Length: 173
Image 1 (spheres, rainbow, N blue to C red):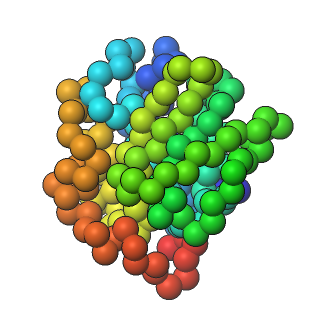
Image 2: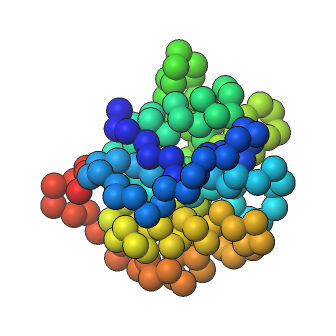
């Protein structure tokens, strides 16, 4: 499991942490950013920047971090074309988390807690340059954001090539 770097604490916990978005990110570290406000407005609840297309190494750490902040998770919805493998579930902290696959290619992930509580995340392609990834993450978690994932990525300079290109030395660069 790779480490998860949390850039801002989840808005669901009633605490705030300093924004560490300008600190260096170690190679191979996935990045998670969630809103820190108590209201759920805007399109996205957070953004995730995995560092490779190897789902198990990336998602396990993310789900552990989210479970610690949100409680037990029931499922994850992901785009089938964005990952090298497509398991039907992962076991996180002794609990099975179901994975739903779709072919929508919309650069998003849905996390389900309970029966009806859903969290929508922008997924930044692993090969994205750090400055562009940070800009996209910051844009996604703004309270007033109503922009689609495609538009956020285009606005911040993430290209279609970033979504498919695999860098030498993956999974972490």
